[in-house]
Image 1 (spheres, rainbow, N blue to C red):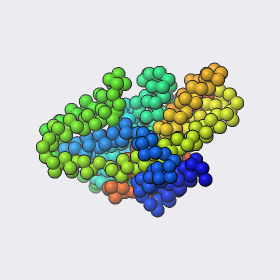
Image 2: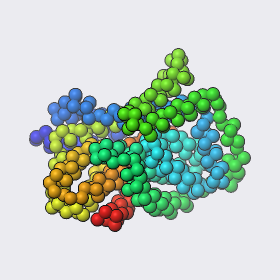
Image 3: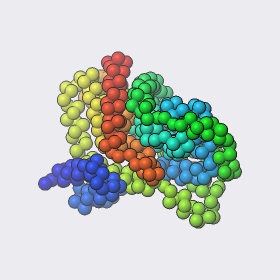
Image 4: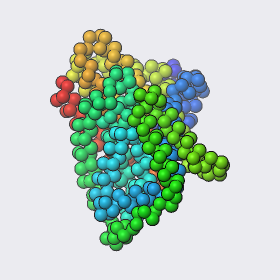
Length: 426
């Protein structure tokens, strides 16, 4: 067998194991990546080059900040405050948390958002003794929808914006409307699916309504330091392009200074904070980047994209719709970052070959790659992070369980996107 065939066989076998859940996905990611190197499909140096350390650095930095912040009681405060605002009614809570997650994902990014909101969700569910999974499912899906709407919400948008020269307002103007429509439709369907399960006892609601949220703050001094560092870090995210800083640099700078302000000489507490990083998610991502990198190096992704685009015979309408669906289905099963990185130069080449209107292609790619991440549990970074946090708290979300709910919703979101692209641009 040639190298390309071996790479495809290893990749397919790895995904089959991840879906079967016979072996933990982190072990599959590491072993699959090492097999790619052992068989000479990709060198160790090239494999390291394909690991997106910006994504991993962003994750680790925000996990450190969130872990220290959780020591202050802030998340318990927010949980009780949010529950009291909607009279401790689980159905209204699902809508409120979904909306909060979607908005924050657009302003920050979807991984940072779920790291901040998921601990709140667990606290609320525990107070009301309701199943936390419907809330987690809604937040995962909402984070990817919200991240679609802006330049900084999802990595594919950052890549498209920087490659094509599209501004923050270009994304707001072109993608916020479809994101809002998709969010409203998705939450309505999820309420229909889970509404009957979201019940709590009146006495638990009364108990929550009587709680004093301010009594949950255990360390006001530490909380002020955390909120200050969080505000600085978020400001760096918003201005990262003008500051010429990657998001990982912003997150790790915040984490470093928060450690300096809080535990500057306490080795035991530093070790405790670092031990709470979701290392299973970090190592899974590293392995996945190498697996997909091997497909990039052997030309598999480029070949598939080129063949698919050739099928359309240069039709703007057919090409835009194909890019939308191809990027959505691909992004559900492989990481969308290398896929988008492969398609950007291909779309530019199509412009040089005489395709007159490229604007629909960029918005099709952004919508497909970002929303496609909702298709499976490993389709987007936020999905993996929430699954890892849930498993650590004894509420694992299985691959099939997630896909049964999320994949049809993803397909529906792409149908809405297709109608939007057709009406607005074609």
